[in-house]
Image (cartoon, rainbow, N blue to C red):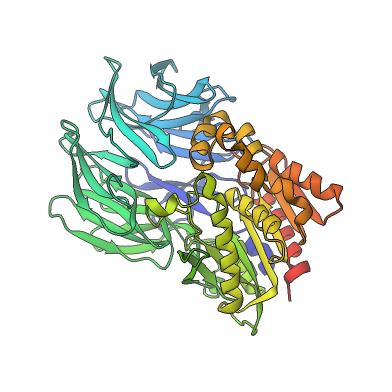
Amino acid sequence: MDTEDYIFQEPAASSPVYAPDGQKLRFIADYDGLPQIWEQQGEDGQPVKVTFSKERITLFKYIANSDMAIIGMDAGGDEKQQLFLLVKDKDPIPLTNSPEHVHHYGGSSPDGRWIAWSSNRRHPAYFDIYIQRLDTQEIHPVFTGNGTYECLMWSPDGEYLVIRKTNSPQDNDIGLLHLSLRSLRWLTLHKGEAGFKNPHFSKDASRLYLLTNIGREFYGLASLSLATGEITWLSQGEWDYEGLAMDRDKNRLAFSINEGGISRGIIADLQTGSMVTWDTPMGVINDIVFSADGKKLAFSFSGPAHPQDIWKVDVATVQTERLTGFLRDLTREKELVEPSFISFRSFDSLMIPAIFYRPKQAKKRFPVVVYLHGGPESQARAAYNSFIQHLIEKGYGVCAPNFRGSTGYGKQYTHLDDRRKRMDAVKDLVSLAGWLKAEGGADSTRLSVMGGSYGGFLVLAAVTHYPKIWSAGISIVGISSIRSFLENTSLWRRRHREAEYGTIERDGAFFDAIDPLHYTDRIRCPLMLIHGANDPRVPIGESEQFAAKLKKRKHPVAYIRFEDEGHSLSKMKNKFVAYTRMAQFLDSIAGK
């Protein structure tokens, strides 16, 4: 396999879960081209494949006090997750059997006899909560409401469900649902905007440990009294805390701190109050989980110079070790490039953070690709990206800005692009282009822009509203019209997207004034559009209507449609096609 083939088919491992016996570790990986469950026995052995489905595995969780597990699958990337019972030496047993609806898993009862999940099977716009008995597969609705509700966990005594209501993308509440009485008591009703996530019951079940940003710009660690609703802060800082986990004996917590796009892992001892950091290379920590005996924890880790693998921490020594690197070319990894972190001044003097990868052997002026994340409530982080590494190897620079509206920099920053402020984020890209030319070494004639989802919208907005700047554009599952996007996105998403973009009734004229779809005649540079036919978030019509307009005026456009994908590319074969075509496209325009 040559270097390009290797980079474009780099596997990834995530979502580790220790078996109840503590000896085995299972995780999701695409070693054979499609995300499946793999099992590693011991810490030196090669993993063994556990599932053999024709669709990607999206979820894996053990049932309490059992070696059985729940897995999730969708169809062709449509995100309509179905739940299955995984029993040793048997085919997965269907549980939800409603492929036209979405199902979010909510955990198993302490005795392992029941599971909880939420679904929009009653109404496509709303998620209700159900419990299901595993031996009979009986389904019982336990909470119905016209909103987005989900179950987060069962209480230790099995009498309650901890549920969450999502009010807007950055605002939610947590409550206790009494299963016998069917009564709900909200614990976190608040004024203003606040998020609550990753709750865990204390040892005496009198409080929840969780992450929240109530009354603050950033998420911190707190405890929530179940009796009074009082919040007590345990640790907080000037960056977001993420991914809270708890050991079985409820003596320790683990989480990471997102420090400007780089993770720092923390283990907190609840008895002594001490906190220690575990070391990793530059990168991003996710999916933290303790082993059954609490002596180790596993997490997924991805860094610019480290493809995504499962790592572990010895809790006693705080030493880290990569567990799933058996397929990696360690010599090639040493050649991967880590970025620098820069900031630039935008049109209104706001400082915008960005991640900048320079080519190893840069000429005085080199081509640069501006790489835009989706969301917009998301963040460009120091994670592994095979396509970025390929571009750097070929002599490109890559700059990934965290334009206004990104997360990771506080609540206020996240809302700087809301509704009528949408084009301010596009102006950030114009300012970045100026910085790259003046200070970043960019060749002004070879400045390209690419991005996915909302990042795709920014690509199309940039090349239509500021066409003189860009030499090429690549939009992946991008929005071409906010109006048509809101009209056609899945019903369960529309209300929450309106909190970000505005409504057609109130803001329709504004959408029409900025939507890239109406300005295709301005575009000067060649474009590439990529989309999955089953995308429930940004329907494929967004790319097809844009491509049709460009083809009508005979403007250079390459359009790739994947029939078996959704909002992201999950199949290795399709990633290889997309990455190869994108590389060829950029090389033909901006390459050396």
